[in-house]
Image (cartoon, rainbow, N blue to C red; front, side, top):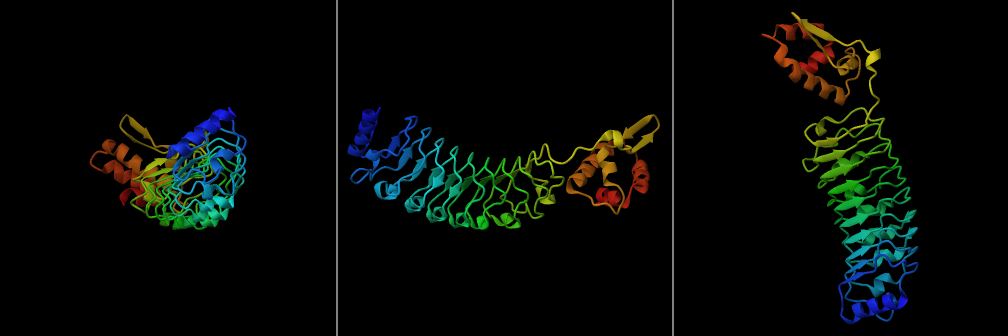
Length: 312
């Protein structure tokens, strides 16, 4: 196996390969052959997925100075070392499915980085220097132990896809709404209780996924015309404990959904999701209201907060 590995690297050096595949080699250490002499000066893409690496060499940038893509998916790396910051041409870094606990601040020096994948690790925080990655387009930090997002994340002006699923987030920083290029935001499976009211105001943001945040009971109104995933959010209403409202016309009796009762009196707070339910309800039952008489009757009996929702 060692001789075969050396031969593969030697051929790559001799023939000035731009791509080198060292996946599934059961490597516990970074191959010395890669770092020998001048290294591989022409190499642009290095694939070392599904090995058993625990660290990266300090002279990696010196030996592989033109590296553009580095794939280290499914290893046992615990720390992203300072040396990573010297790979100034790096555009794609995949460290998913490792044992990462620390990402060094020097990662902010990767000014050409466009795609950063750190999913399925043990990260509790990310350094604020992530905000220095002006060219970053994709950031996947799902399935970690994050309590908050990086302070300066809103400075990643090129960020288009942000995935933070299955962490421990309680809130979303309002400055996240300032990301001008963000198109897709996924925060499913966290502990979110509310979202910033400005979220969705940007026309660029079209997809928002907040599924399985059981404490989340409302959505900002700006998200109503977006593609939303919100299944498993909020505590379900127990219909057996709610007296359903209804109205009748002759032999026709229509029971209104429990959400109508949940709005309560005019002093109660109307959550955005409930507002959406009321508007949908109005359009659904409009065909049953003849000449507007039953509508007037219903609005007369309904709480003022409901009337405002249906007449605006």
